[in-house]
Length: 137
Image (cartoon, rainbow, N blue to C red; front, side, top):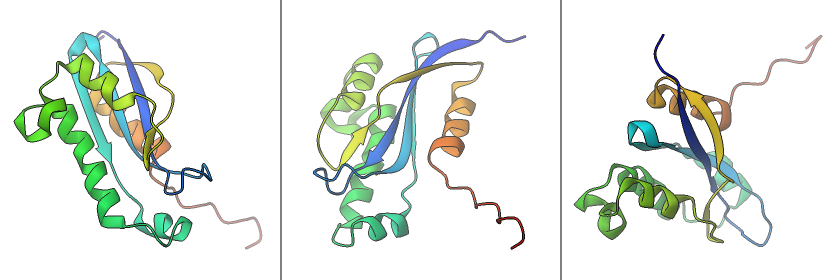
């Protein structure tokens, strides 16, 4: 049986009007120190965002969200933050901030494969599942 590793993750939230505190989950950042794994997936439900805040510039939000996986991957394409060591990039990404993009508190878990855990968290926390029909409808 493969070894199970601890990991930490945070949910990426789009908070279009910080003063209202309403948000849409738009991604997951996952860090597994033992495997030196730092990765993120983001998926913006633009219809939900516009329904919540019609005045928001969706292209700007999408651009900021797309920077998160680049920072996780590191390297020159990720700018100055991408040059930091993996653990420092993780801490920078999940640091509390009061901007349109925020992260949840950090949560922990166990996994054999961090990439699979990331995909499972996306399914659970970000992607909407169709609601089951009400009985009799």
